[in-house]
Amino acid sequence: MTDQINPQQEHILEEGFEEVTSQGVRAFTVESLASRLAMSKKTIYKFFPTKEDLLDKILEFATDRIIHEIERIRLEEPNPARRFLLMMDFIVKMAGKVSPQRLSELKGRYPLLWKKLEQFRLERRADFYEFLSDAQKAGYVRADVDIDAVATLYIHIVNSTFQPEFFVQNDMSVSKTIRLFVDIITQGLFTEKGLKSVGTE
Picture 1 (tube, helix red, strand yellow):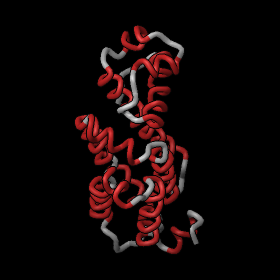
Picture 2 (cartoon, one colour):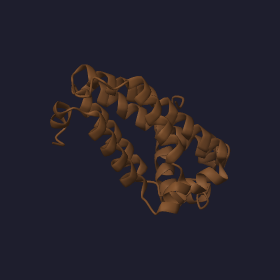
Picture 3 (cartoon, helix red, strand yellow):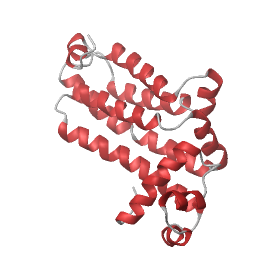
Picture 4 (cartoon, helix red, strand yellow):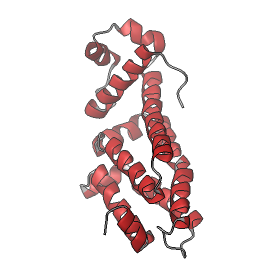
């Protein structure tokens, strides 16, 4: 999680995220971001001393956004089956902002940042487990399914398969692949009651 940031820092990180997702880390520069913000490079460097530090904080800003959205869904959506799908819909929305080529640049040029991203994905296992376990208790997920094992398998499939080279080699978009994966999971796990509750049957 990022430390407490002021509105100016948040604006820099938000625009930095848009710049990185549209241009990629190779083309991304502090100069280009400063121009986008109509701000001096000196102001950006005051908060983020190096490009690497800025990229690190941009990644944290993006992952924090996902965590906050998951928490909002947890608090506002009473149906646990829909909680799971809403969480995945938001992840699809975020993933759709980044092309496989941009992901490949990040993995190749900044391996430590890539490792942080992979660790963040692994930490979402607890969210998957909670939402699917609650859905099972409500009768939306098959009673014979070991949710603990499913959550572990699910997150490790995501981390091992959802690599930039996979998308590039197979000419598949990130967001469409995630949607297909979620559809396979829900059709295999959800009961008829669960499918009806989320409007897929």
